[in-house]
Each structure stands twice: as structure tokens, then as C-alpha cells.
Length: 380
Ligand SMILES: *Cc1c(COP(=O)(O)O)cnc(C)c1O
Image 1: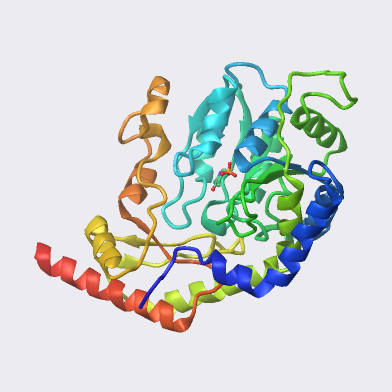
Image 2 (image 1 turned 90 degrees about the vertical axis):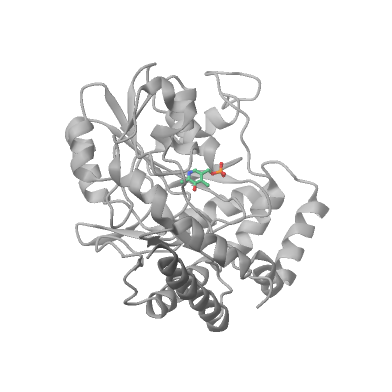
């Protein structure tokens, strides 16, 4: 089988080409490339989709996280709690703003922030929590919000991987990213709602925070050439907004296609002793940004064998953040977060996108099963 991809954006584009091309050429013809009607229209449409009061688009997901932290009036040294099993952007912005990243481990089943560990890490210096809705499912936001409210701590959701997912909040299902004080997302091409370059956004229900976020993203200015705060220049391009406006209409269908593909993988891989397929947390829906299995032994060999069969895979993430060189200064050591460290050695993400067919999936799982059994023979 040829040309299997982790994410098949070409086939997806082919199906909506006419709409996308028209939306892009409308922007080109209007020459309103910056903050024009396409950007405002997309922000309003995303507000309606998420059921949130304010969406502020920005240049990428990393900027969204940085701007969120800048909007909270934190002081140097204030502690921000997150998990080490995430993309570096989450903790990078904490460190960049001279705040202190404090890691807590994830749970071994859903790979999400461990609530008991979070409880233990909260202290008077804790000012913010950044739960990461990893691989497409939402952290236990009910527990996190209860802790945050009890201790007067801000919550900034890293929703780069779970747009469209929902979390059960006392019987009401609420969209990921709209539950904390601020939600952040990325429109990187391979994300569940991806554009044709970089893009990101912040969400909030708080009017004052929304105004502040808007101001910070626009050079700390809400009135042209008057600057109230040191800000940044972080904008979503109008052409990207036009693409996103079209793709947003398909987001639920795309997420359903991912969930169906995940279900198919689950069936094809059921009952294999050396493999653990992903579980869905009862408090959350799952939009399968990644379909990530745990390979109990010889993960890297299995991965190589799949590659030789033309099957790309991903390892998200091979080194937890507390063991990265850049985080040496914070004094963490191997053994501090055993679940994240174990996952780093075992996780394997299979191709996951909106265009998978049964035929492709069967080829992938057949190859995976063969690779698992040959690698078992080699060690026995
Ligand atoms: C993609 C991603 C980001 C960063 O988004 P960019 O748009 O690439 O800056 C942040 N956090 C997580 C968990 C991500 O997956």
C-alpha cells in the first residue's frame, strides 16, 4: 500500500476545494489582509460553535498561551502548574515570562493531569494551572475548577489538541477551552481544526479579560498609537481565517470521522497482550487528535518495522519536559514523574486523520501485529 500519511490534508482539501478557493480569492480581491471581515467573521462563528462569549484570534497556539499568561497580571516567580507530558510550548511560555513551571504527572490511562498530584502541588505561590487536553480528550475540568476556585487560582486550558471535545461539568457538557478562565488553541495545519499555515486563538467568557487579551495581542494598545501595556504583535492572517471559516463548518463531521477511525482501530487491535489501546475518560468526549497506543516492549523496533512497510507513526512525546536540557535549571530529575517517563518509552501514535479507509487501517494494524510478534520472537 502506498502513500500512507500521518495526516492526509490533501484528500481533505480536495473535497472542499471549491469553497476554500473561493473564500481565499475573496480575501485576495478585497485586499483586506489584516484584521478584516474574514477574521472578525471567523471569530464570531467560532464563538457560536463553542458557546463562548469571546474569541480573540492570534498568530499561533504558542502565542495564545503566552498572551493568556500575560493577561493574568502574574509576578515573576509565581508558580504555574502543568504536566511534563505535552508539547514544549505549554511550559516554554511559563519560563519565558519568568514564571516558574511546576510539573505534576499525568495518569497512566488517559495521559491527562493527575488530580491527586495537582492537589499536592498547590501552595500559596501557585497562581495558575494549565491543564493540557492531550490527544483530543479533556482533563477532569470539574475537579480542576473546584480546586482552582477554592484556592483562587487561574485556569488556562491548553486546548490545542481537543477543539470540539466536551467535558461533563456537573451533568452539563461544556466545550473544551470554554471552562477555565481562558482557553487557548492552535490552528496548525495538522490540528483538528487546521489552517494552511500558522494560527491560534484565545477564548474567554470574561469581558474584561477579553479586552485585555485583545489589547495585549495588539501591541498593548486598544486605541491606535496609545500603548497601555507592553504587548506583542500576534494576528491571525485574513487568508487563514477564510480557510478556517470553511473548515469550521466541517469540524464536527471531521471529529466524528476521527472517532469512527479510532473505533475501527480499537476493534482491529482488540485483545493483543503487548498493546494497550486508548481509553476514553468517562467525564470527556474524545476527538482523537492522536490515536495513541502503548507498546509494552520494543516500541522503537516496532516503529522501524512499520516505517519499512511504508507506515508513518509518531512518538508524542519521546522526552518528558522535566528531563529536557532546557529545563535543567528547575532541578527536576529522572524518576520525578514516573508515569510520563514510562509513557515516553511506550507511546506510539498511528496515522489518524479524517480520510482513513478501512483498507488503510487494516493494512496498518496487520503490519503492527506482525511487527509486534516478530519483535517478541527476537527477544525470547
Ligand atoms: C500544537 C500545540 C501547541 C502550540 O501550537 P502552535 O500553533 O504550534 O504554536 C501548544 N500546545 C499543544 C498541546 C499543542 O499540541
